[in-house]
Length: 236
View 1 (cartoon, rainbow, N blue to C red):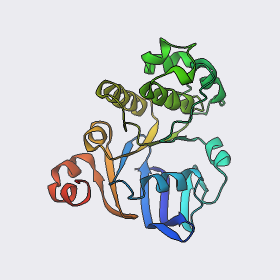
View 2 (cartoon, helix red, strand yellow):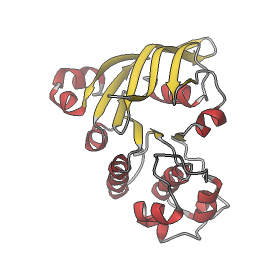
View 3 (cartoon, one colour):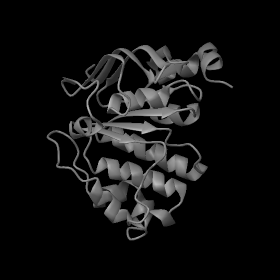
View 4 (cartoon, rainbow, N blue to C red):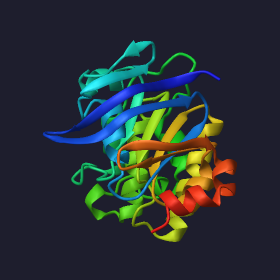
């Protein structure tokens, strides 16, 4: 099983605060991996370390044949790593189509090439509001737009930070269907989540963070069967 991105002995944090301790994690190509853990476990910090928004203190982040630890985010993105932040950060004064055009990058060999038409098929809600400004959209619609804009960069790996948080159940279901469709298209996905039900519905594999340490990895079916791990690391 080929790992599209691999983290080895990663330590990272902010200022004097150490957040991640000796993380080893591989993301198999063509699969969806769920990064689980309670609020404050370090999920966002790990994703930001992968995309370059947090500079690791030590360790390796291997992606597309390069150790990208310490690289600027734009350089990592150009290699085909897409990032959807929890905060969404769409351009509220621009229309759906204009937001998508900002994310456009050239097609990549051996990877799906995304166009507005293909993205409107993936997210029908967006297709019905192509000329609507971002600031006039609901939170769920903005989340879909953020993912669609990132896909316009034709990434080989997509990092999703809490994509289901705060969304209505019908939008969460649409989001899950879109992630499954991305896997069918050959896009590798890492989804950071607190919602185990959502993660179990989209992910092949799971990894659990607890206070900055990786405490469980395996396939999703194994996690669902491991009642002790779920009670210890995921339940409130």
